[in-house]
Length: 385
Image (cartoon, helix red, strand yellow):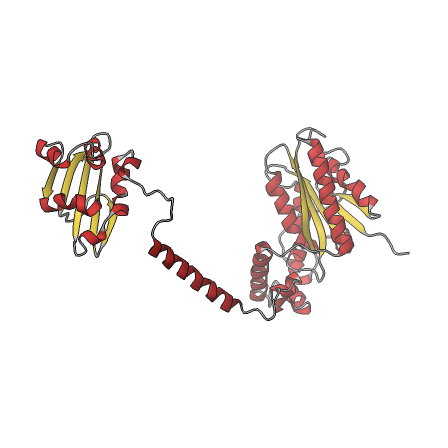
């Protein structure tokens, strides 16, 4: 009779047995054990694990030289069928116990495992940081050859004071179910940009230092063919569809889009569409900004002119319209050499544009002034309707 599959959880909380992290792990237990799997929790607070001193010898030799409980925990995680990393948030990140353990696992962080297995991240805070910290724990699962099948995150201050406890318990059931199915059925999750960025960074780093501090890492990558490409690392292949010429399909689609656009331009505005009129604009700036949309290019196809508007009153701004090659464009600020400068209160120009005030009479009365080629002033009506 074969041994049951084993799920190993590492709890970084110092509150062994009664903290919220421990309570959340216990929410996972019933589903895991109902699936005839063994569930073991390793409490880092009960273990002797020294700080990483950053000597780098683990990269050269493949393992840390410090003799304590770290090595045995790593062996258990590597032999497990599923891995869970759990920690509360202490000052925006995992606890000192969890961080110390993970720092000591540096050598594994450079050595992707030859086989993948499912994992879960668990995190809780009083309401600040459990999402980001849970994401961090999910990302370091790969250190032990695991990929994240789900994250159980919650808010709670005092022991058991979960916000939405029923929802947390339901989420725990869902996370446990996905973990169990991944173990039983050999399921994987799709590779993502995070996997790709890790691969690009790590492969480049190790190759650069393969003759010095990362010699052991380099041997590991060579032994498992990891330099052969991203697909070899992630152990997932890019799907191919035989007999389908996507370049031909794409080109035909582009031609269809071109033809459809050309046909729409030929037919003009869609039936029922409403063209904006001067009545739609409540401000003089909006009116002048949108004047190019009403430009009648056929009225003076050879015209080259610059109209400058100096608007005062309720609105104060300067802008200009540039007409050339059958096009009209709007520009903020004054023009370098305007052909006509119109100085007007905002309300006067709006009234003239709406037909509420006769433009010629308003000019004669001095409601607004114009300086430059006054012939261009007379052309405004034919240029813009």
